[in-house]
Structure formats: C-alpha cells, structure tokens
Length: 201
Image (cartoon, rainbow, N blue to C red; front, top):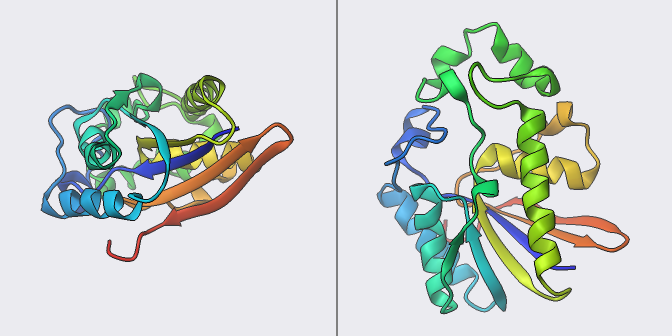
C-alpha cells in the first residue's frame, strides 16, 4: 500500500495570533509560511512522489504548490482533506474559547464533542479516514502520496491508524509545516514519524 505524507499547512496570521481559522476563505500563508512551503519542497525534492493532494483551502493549496512544482505535478484538491467544520467557533480566539465549558469536552472527551452548528470529531475522523482509504485504493503499493491538510485532521488520522481511542487524539502534536508519515499495508499500519520538521524550517 502507498506511503502517506500528511503535511500540515505552513504558518498564517491566524496560527500566529492564536485564532481558529477553520474553513474561512482568504486565509493565506504569511511570509514565514511561504518560506516553510519552499523548505518542504526542498526537503522532499529527492522523494519519488506520485501525487500531491490538498485540502481546497488557500493556505493548504499554497503549501502544496511548491512541492508539486518540484515534481512537475499538479495539486489535486480533495474536499475530504478539509479542516474540521468548527461552526460557531470559527474565527474566534483560542484564548476566548478556552473559557467556554465545552473546551473541556474538546480536550478530554472529544468523542462527545459537536461544534455548535458544525461538525463532530467523530464525523471529521470518519471523513478523513474515508478520504485516505479512497486515495490508497487509487494507488499502487510503492507510491508516495503527499496530502496537505490541517492539524486536527492529521491528528485524527494518526490516532485512527495507531489504534488510539478518539478521546486520546489531543495527546498528539502536529505543528505548521510538519510531516507525519504513515504506511498503511495489507497487514496493518505503521506510523513512521509524527510532527517531523525538516531541518531548515
């Protein structure tokens, strides 16, 4: 089965200022994020990458673009890699959200959490796993696939393939421009690395 390189998008001003961008349109990489995207492309230049997929949001597509260009590929947007639908929490500051009663549910019992007028973590995990399994079926065993997405979605995927209960996925960390490598084989899955940052990022 293919090797999946799950890459979180680079820094943007929402990440920098501690706001929850969610699915807001028009959130672009800042100067640091653009440099991170270029560094990722350099780091992966020698890998034989078969395809580059991305969440359709601007910050992920902009992170994916230099990687794809280095391999003469096009970035293929996949809605299944989209960010969690945070509903009414979108565009709020994390400092503000931490004061809400539901914040404890988010951190300690996420399997019970549905964001007001948004998605549940159960639904988000089902979506990302369905998307990754679909990509796996479309490719050959030795293919290397880049999937550029978002922190919670990558953590949810890693937790699933590790066999962690959903309620423990918040124990994982996925930083901007990090690479999480998964091999999903016929006899199980293997997490080769989590939250790896190339040396020049």
